[in-house]
Amino acid sequence: HAKKSGRNTFRSYRKGMDELIEKRRALEADIERGLERGEFELYLQPRVSALDALIVGYEALVRWKHPERGMVQPGDFIPVAEVSGKIIELGEWVQIEACRLATGFPEHLHISVNVSPVQFRHPQFLERIEAILDASEVSPHQLELEITESVLIDDDQRARLILGHLKTLGLRIALDDFGTGYSSLSYLSRYPFDVIKIDRSFVSALGTEETADAIVRTIIDLGSGLGMRVVAEGVETLDQARYLSVAGCDELQGYLLGRPQPVDSIASEVSAEIVSELTNVARLQARR
Ligand code: C2E
Ligand code: MG
Ligand code: MG
Ligand code: MG
Image (tube, rainbow, N blue to C red; front, top):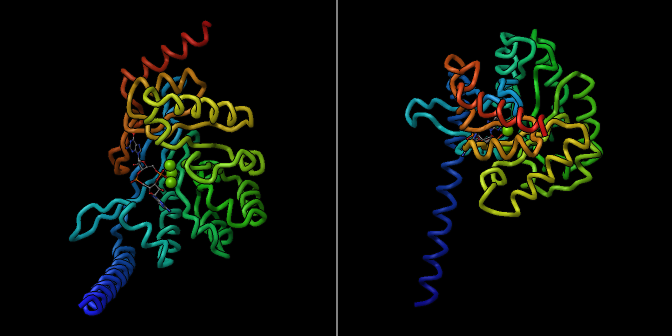
């Protein structure tokens, strides 16, 4: 009896695996089709100076306008695109599209794009970016690449060479989701980051978990001390914005300042209420 049920369990396990693999294959093919048919779109979310609430740039966040599934969020297709290698094609499309958008921007605004570790590891990563920049009118300093700590762990030597080369091309480099990976203080000093982005999980815990306050302050002091701009992700409340500004955070990003929006509906400034709040905080700070 036990033997029989064991076999059944195995069979249903195999069936589950087969279904999973089948689903993944279908999604891969679907991504390919989506790229051919122009179903992907970049949404832009503003990044705002903490001192005066002026918009300094936008992060490009990919969306998939699927003909049957509706709007699909990156969490539902980026992981599969990474496993299948489709992220190379998709990532290139994102970079080309971001360059095209940035070309129409005033000089002082940048666009940042997320780079998957799979893209970063690709042997032709640098060549492809160079080719995209060459084919575009964009000023390289208007393009920022966001990478995560995982690419630094893989191959320290190569990562350093590549980041150094990207810098000589004039691009800006941001370390995304800081504090969630195998964060090491030495990473920050060994690599030429222009920007570090404090992960949303610390920002949302501000004021509720004592440790979050300490961690956020420490990241801000560390980044500032190393000459980097420190950006807070996932800022949703005025209290968080005030706290971050007083603590010396340079830039804010989050629903409070603006949600990711299609390009034709992005705002060029944040609401007057937030501008006056942030400038007030900065004025009070300056007086102390
Ligand atoms: P990320 O790079 O850390 O991007 C920030 C994510 O937080 C975005 O989610 C954004 O919509 C969301 N967010 C921004 N402000 C707030 C807030 O105040 N509250 C909350 N709860 N969330 C906020 P999204 O667009 O779903 O993207 C998720 C992740 O998918 C990104 O995390 C990034 O890792 C990845 N991703 C997005 N676009 C691309 C892309 O073009 N290429 C690659 N390789 N990855 C991408
Ligand atoms: Mg990002
Ligand atoms: Mg992030
Ligand atoms: Mg990320």
